[in-house]
Image (cartoon, rainbow, N blue to C red; front, top):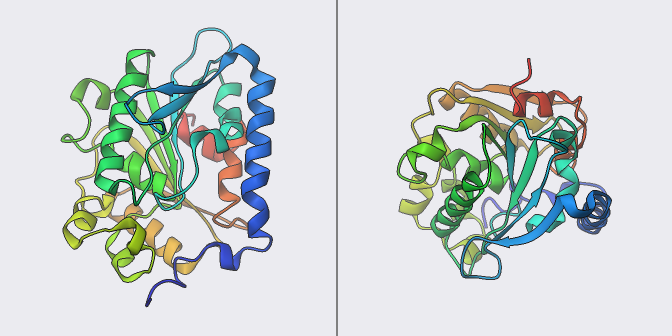
Length: 263
């Protein structure tokens, strides 16, 4: 298909096949290190994948970080990314990692609804501000949570910060990729689900992050979201689509500070 190569991340990352098992190993080790503070597979809906993992902070939490994973809406689970909670946890924040059903079993619009339901459940069990972070497809999903039609006002008003990492801000180009055989996007759905077509949220600190070594289309997508939403954009030198997220492990990284609203 015309745009397959443009959106092919793994083909341009050395040792790409090694990343998923490395993530899973790091995630499992991190959960083990937390002991009882790690709660895995909390149900928020009727399907097996409608679960979230929750990591308690030490002491009273200063707020809650919600992470939504990527994988083009068709791969991965929250338990693959547990180690990315390290940065916010070290700064006294609880962390929730949301899972969802995958395409082609569901449509992206349904995934958006699932993430919103998970957000509502997480809000019930927590207090204080909510900070949202998502990578790639997750970058799209966290931005969708600011839509008044998606999330209830009392939950949406608690969202203080959003970090959208290497986001897919405009879904319409995906109509021209072979992956749409799995995503089954229509032009109407792609338009509605594109953050680039949304009204930017008020009162939320939004930052867009992307690796300088990413595919050109992801640099373009990040720039588009930044311009349309009036959000600050950070292009990180020496980082690509698979290792840009490593910054979440470091409590001193500028990404974690942006996520928690630390100046």
